[in-house]
Amino acid sequence: MTRGLIGLALLVGASGVQASELDLNLGADAVQFEAAGELVEGIRLGGGVVDSDYREDATVFHAQLMGSQHTSRREIGVGARWTHYDTDVGEGGGLGLGGYGYVYLPSLPEVSLGGYGYYTPDAVTSRELEEGYEVGLRARYAFTPNVDGYLGVRQLDADFKDEPGSRTLDRGAQVGVRLRF
Image (cartoon, rainbow, N blue to C red):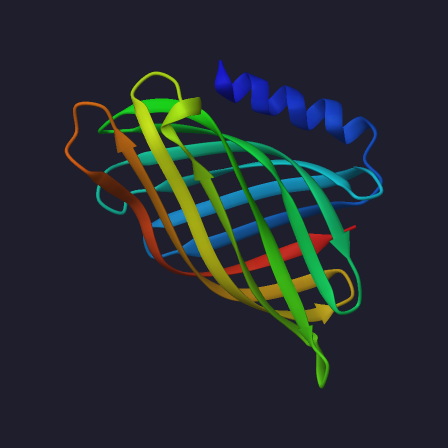
């Protein structure tokens, strides 16, 4: 059901999208795909999936609505994200908050450095999920005005009922590409 909701949100959002981007990254144990688009200036709708076999099999879906700003000096976004975890140790979802931020280096405008973070607290979770978070850092290089390549690191954790402590579902380096159109 959650997969269907994410797909529906992306289709509905795509009909009114002004600018769009696709993002794909690969790590030793995981692959991630994301798609996002601007509904109106400053409001972005997006979604994605991470599939990881870091320690247990985990597939994590998300859909998000963000307020955003992109200038020649920085790129930032803050908003809400629904995340659904389907793992060997538990399943569930929740509504979280978070955002991203990148700064472009003045002496090397093709290079941007930054990261992202999202947190889902126990108060807004369902099923077996108690809390979850995803954080990452990236160094990006703009090969063309529409294509960025990047190197990054990510940590994705979740805490499930009846399981002791938080489980790391993905951790490590990744290489990726982002297409903007």
